[in-house]
Amino acid sequence: MSRRGTAEKRTAKSDPIFRNRLVNMVVNRIMKDGKKSLAYQILYRAVKKIQQKTETNPLLVLRQAIRRVTPNIGVKTRRNKKGSTRKVPIEIGSNQGRALAIRWLLEASQKRPGRNMAFKLSSELVDAAKGSGGAIRKKEATHRMAEVNRALAHFR
Image (cartoon, rainbow, N blue to C red; front, side, top):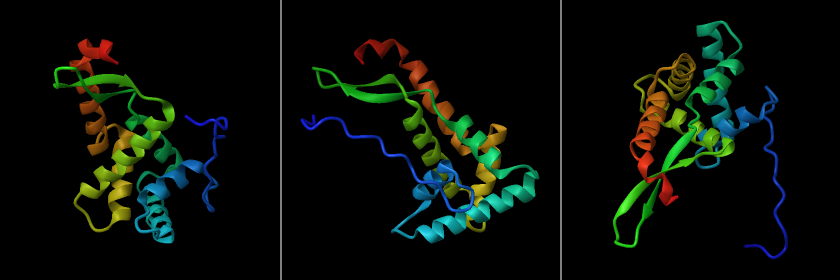
């Protein structure tokens, strides 16, 4: 614990085209090996494909996809005195939930078959906004796991 006081929260920067912090968060998660311009290219191509597919505002689709994938509850592994481990359900805050949702969306889009990352990401975002796709299945599996282990909630 810090003796110098609490650290102030830093606000995330917004991206240059949409002026949106959520877009910048997604770009930072896409980025590998510091290649941010490539991550921007991937996301902007995906946004263009979403615009062509749905003929709606692609930022609304992105926001809706992340909102649908964001988990309310998760499980955390706890070890008791006897050495056995239990998955204890915990509530997830909004920032951590958003980070998990972005991570799950990108993982699901990477696993998709397809031509390139922009195509796969756009398809996953459209599916998640509609309520289907790999990221939605991941969220439902997490919620199911938390529901099964609800009896262990007192170990929190």
